[in-house]
Length: 142
Image (cartoon, rainbow, N blue to C red):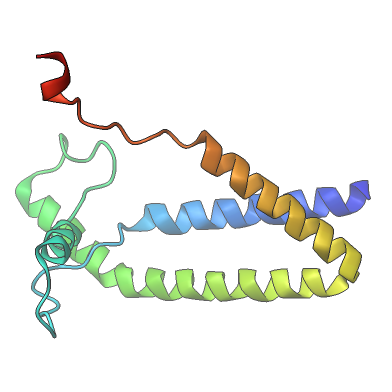
């Protein structure tokens, strides 16, 4: 039992480190010039695309690099973006495949226990989420 737990922790730690490395290499943003909208979009979607179209420098670079260096960095990020996105997709597929193989080892009773534990954890997370603040009713107190 302990050996299995250690192996699982090692796998999750490795996956976490890999995901961190992939996400820190380049920011997942698209340049506005790279893609023209194929269909009409709503204002929300346009705002989201505008945010994605912005480049971001790695932490602490903004105060150090000049405009020319900034543009070179943006080009490097653009060069690596498709490769990183492909790796992310591959990682997602590998994780799914691994999880399916792991669950195939379980008995039906164990699968049910796992499903119940997951549902309980999901309910607990949902209960711990901060409640959205409601705007104060102006007519009540004034």
